[in-house]
Length: 425
Picture 1 (cartoon, rainbow, N blue to C red):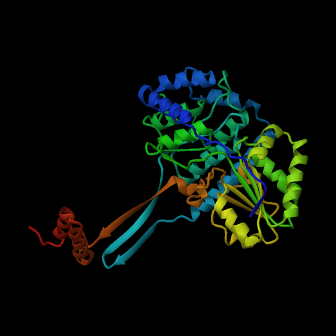
Picture 2 (picture 1 turned 180 degrees about the horizontal axis):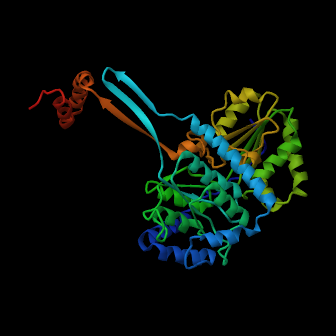
Picture 3 (picture 1 turned 120 degrees about the horizontal axis):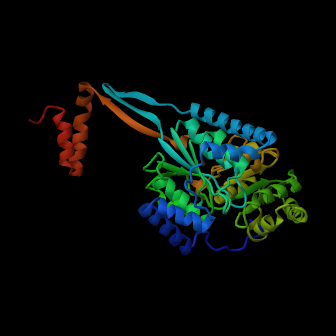
């Protein structure tokens, strides 16, 4: 393995200062409720209205800026995500099986009752994030979805297209609150609106403060995953198009200066050509200030000997987004094990996944793809087990269970089993 371009060492994305700030906000919101939410919303967003909850009239007014063309494209993306989520949900089934005569075991699939969806604002009002984090739990059967998003500073205004996506995706309540205070409000309860005690689960991407808030709130509520700066990795051989690869790398790098973009290739000529094409693109790239900085510091081009080494390097990187632009992408499809979402062939691209082809864009980063996948309907569904035991089944099971309990020294457990055999008075 040879680096034709190597990333620079970078400091950790979450500092002790971030951890301490997040902890302080969460504790104050838990203790002081809406008073603390107002304080931090005023401090960070210049926004402290009588109510953070958008009324029907405010929503109607906010949607006036959405053109028919925007609406049609958002509706298209929404239907693709819903359609794929429905298909995924259809693969999930309850189970009931008689494992022994008189012993019936099973599992049920029960949706989470309430979800809080955080929709990022900031540099980019992420329209697709609303679809991914609101429509999908609704398809899963979640009864109540609360949505928060950062308002434009000082105005409380939400980007109209983003608001349209929230409404169309089925949000039950929409709040103009951003940052850590929004995460805390969803976890501990918002104003006097249901659910008063807070949601059961929080999902969605955000900046380092939002990600740290999710980490600290895990246990108080469920979360989807801990997503850091977005990543892209491209696997390519000599048959790939260097200009196209360069564009795909920069397209994802525009998320932020801390977004890694990596090419792994078996062709030195292709690797060097991609580096040149990135430089050419940056002369006219509309977000060159961000994407260019990300490429200069975190961009990598790795030269490997053959497809097998490319496979091993890719699985070690465990990238959030993985494009395969090789002569035989199916060879990699059958063997790759670590990635958040996979894009096979030159026509499959990260931007399709990001903006609404149907797969979800809330995905594992920082090598978390080694042990988890991304957001999907299954994340919102609890698989819970049950048992039914007849007298016949009891006679088969109880002696063995009591013996195991005895061996563990748990005499009380043994008693509860033997009582069912009538062995104790």
